[in-house]
Length: 68
Ligand code: SF4
Image 1 (tube, rainbow, N blue to C red):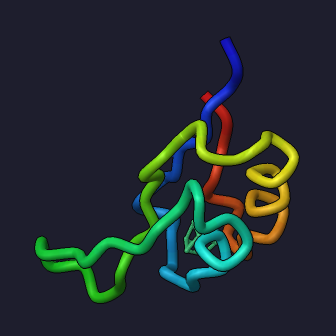
Image 2: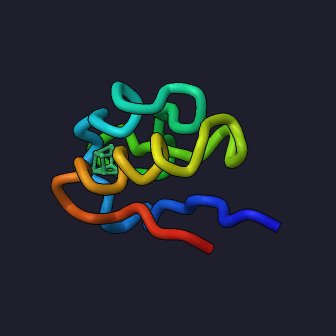
């Protein structure tokens, strides 16, 4: 079983970097519960090779993306 990525929503600043680096896995989701910013979500955990997912992790300015 391979690792899958997850995002800490409290940490995400909505910069969209992960969705640009790896759109197969990450997408932005409107927040309707009072948060000021859009948050990134994992919409397809196995949508890209681990190396590409890891590149998104490495480029996240807040280091919110982790393996589970
Ligand atoms: S790169 Fe990090 S801070 Fe930026 S949208 Fe993705 S999870 Fe959020």
